[in-house]
Length: 534
Image (cartoon, rainbow, N blue to C red; front, side):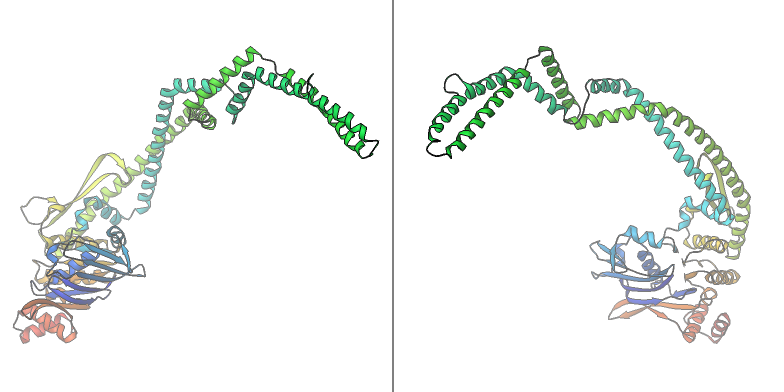
């Protein structure tokens, strides 16, 4: 619900505040007084694009709207400057126009000569027909059947694509897998093979080094063992002088024993190093293969192992992909049958409701001074089913006798479009409800009994939803429970628009003036009181 708007510097409105009631709000005023600027302001608050024509001077335009949606209070502020920039705030937080429209689109329906009516979107015409028909449960089943069918169909196409992809790459993958399986890959194999290859390549050098060390330990001349033997002999001479030298002698004797054991172990180790040409060639081949695999499959052994696992899994899918395709193919065919069955049921419901919908709309239009109008629904069958079924729906109308029936989106008159939309809203009022309906120029070309009917219809509609109506007719204006008047005033040679809320007395005067013009008569006062039921 729209609770209040504040308008600053919008064209000829310098500063205005309007508080709205929750039922029928009437706005009246002479032509050119600025009534439609109020609708324009509301439209801008809902996310409409602004025009530079809205600027009177270089001052910023500031619009603030206070709304209540689903029992939640929301403040919307939009600020525009003449350079073309604008800012949007929702509850004092800067927001995008996309966020703004998402919040407001489901709660306020705007119908004016400046606004693109929701009825101009022919894709929602079928929604009006379906809502009127009251078969939402069937529509939900149809929508879910379409979602399930599409999901299975897309999955089936993907599996078939994968199968074709596997078939096209099978030869390559088989070759790569054979190449990767030619050697038992594991993390660190490149290090192990390189180490063994280096060992085999350096056998002669290793054996020579061991021999040189053994010679140092026990050489014929100047060997370490010989030097230790000499040291033992020398120390033994001192043991008679100082018995502690016996301890040193024992240490050297132990070292001599260690040298013998070390020499023995090193000779054993040397004997282990035997060059095997066949093993060397095998290691050389393995090393070359490992390096090639690393180059071709990601630069590391781990990346090669990961790729091998991937293509093994990929090729393994061939074993069960045919079974999956077969099962999904059955599900898709069944889903298509279910979808067709539900779509046919929905089509039959629509076909049955079309004449009822047309008849009701034409009756309401007749009450709204459109007696010559003929409203028609064009329900056509599409080649392909969608989540809404097989049908395309578009509203057509003829507004005058002898004229051609045309799509409703081609009707130019703002007043006619608003009345058509009002007729639809009246028909749908027990089916779906928006928080606020705004009508501008809905009563153009209406008079007499039709004007009275229009007012009664708006009043009835406002019992279930908030209605804001800019009106030129006293029969309509008298039905409102909140009435604002817009008028122009000269202020220092500057024309400004003022908006005032009328009380019971000033309302009588306004209705009387709407009846008789500038000169208010006793008769118009009496008639105004009659309309206001005073």
